[in-house]
Amino acid sequence: MYGKKRGHRRTGSRTWGSLGEALFFGFFLVLGSLFLAGLLNMLVVPEWRVNHEFIETQGTVLMTRLGEPEDHEPDDEPADDAPPLYRPEVLIEYRAGGKTYQEKTYDIHFHSDRAFTADRDAQAEALAAFEEGEKIAVWYDPADPQTVVVVRGYTWLLWILLLLPVAFILIGGVGLVLTLFHWGKSIEHRVATTQMASRLNPLKEAKQGGVEFPFVPQDSNLTNSPGTRLKYRLPIDLSRGWRLVAILAACLFWNSIVAVFAVIAVNSHLAGRPEWLLTLFVLPFAAVGLAIIYFFVREVLVVTAVGPTQLEISDHPLRPGGRYHAYVSQGGRLTINSLDLSLVCDEVATYRQGTDTRTEQACVYSQPLLHRQQVELLPQAAFEEQLDVEIPAECMHSFKADHNEVRWRLLVRGDIAGWPPFERSFPVVVVPLLAGNQP
Amino acid sequence: MKVPLVSIKIDNRQAAHVPGETLSGEYQIDAVEAAELDAIELSVLWYSEGKGDEDLGVHHFERRTDEDEDPTPLTELRKFSVTLPNSPLSYEGVLIKLRWCVRVRVFLKSGRNHFAELPFRLGTAPEGRLVAPPLETVEEPSPAAVTDGAARGGVD
Image (cartoon, rainbow over all chains, first blue to last red; front, side, top):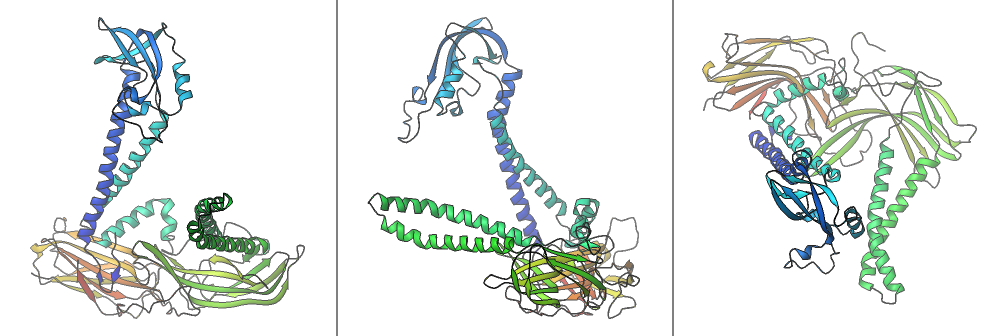
């Protein structure tokens, strides 16, 4: 936990911060441990003992029936709307340790509430495996011969529950270990240790950039696709696609909730007993839902109706003062009022404000590379053009850290009559100019 | 309460140091006895200032404690020498400022720690200027920006 710097000072005390972190992770660890202990005691250990420690003997089925909770606890009145619950009950007679016992049982969870379910048919089917007077194998607890079962096995579905406390223990345990490991260490010591660990982890290498240019994004993802005209075909920035997914999620979430109330309101009108208060309440929410649908459809049309944009470049990474060839191709079947290609550099800053994470962006360089008007796109003839891109000799290189980024990109922007403008962004990496790596 | 006096000096100090150059200098602790010191850390690092939350990268880190085999007292003059990396370069942008410094942090046996740092500039990246409206409101650059050449310090 690094406090936000305000001038020369950080807000908050690091010791209290570390203590808070330790308590937070410790809470998770204790909660997970208690939950795990409870599950082990309630589920894992009894089932394991039945399958490994219980002694097998022969018993006789005296009676079978579907039991209901009321049979055992008449004081507990079930709620009016609660469905009836059942469990299979098998009354058996068996001998253990020289004594004869008669016990009502089924599996090891017989005496817990989990033995009851509302699925009467399933319980009856389980009970059908036993016939009165039949000799069957039963298993009893050598430590308590009155504890006996007629069915063994594991409840695998419940075992999935174990994942929950294990996840809590992992989060709490790892967090606590890291907090204690960092306890009392300066921020420089912590960061140096973290960076060292990151360097040893090949999966994290991209986060800190490469060895030659630390904290400059690596370009391996930008140069793994050869172009048809030039050396590399640049991948498109997918952030707009994710935005579309986010709008779709918001659209579904909002409208599914509104739909429930809308259906109730409409039904009340159809039934001749109109719920005017509910109707008036739902209307503004429905209007917002329709607006989200309109916005989503509009975005989908912009993304899908305009054909694919391809951008290729003669070399990569780019260097200050370097001159490169670029090739742009725009497909589709429509007329574009104007089509622009620009080289853009943005600063992107991410910060936390309360519980929100906000991102701000400022454009610090924009160079128009191409401007065409009234571009007619035909399916058999995409718009194509080759041009030169010159990186300014004096410029800040690409930079990426956890919360701050200097981002270079080639931006294609189209203006279509009657449609919102479309933008397609192609990230590029500009590395610092060093003695010996002049373009 | 004694406050250690930390002196940091960079040899051959320039307006801007070149990536790959060797940055050398020395530091010394005064105003406290060596016996009062628990450890000293020297870091050559960059950190961000501005709108975003702080990022920090440590290029060089060394820690000396009173338990080291080195018999030299922690208060004595100590030299350092570091080859500067190729990036990130110092930068004065609209939302982001990247600053390099040599930082010395002194840990006292009392549990407190004090630090002092000497900024320097890596590379000659030009100042960033807003050329188009950002997507959201842009705040003025932080008034807490450190002027190159001025040492600063603090207590944690």
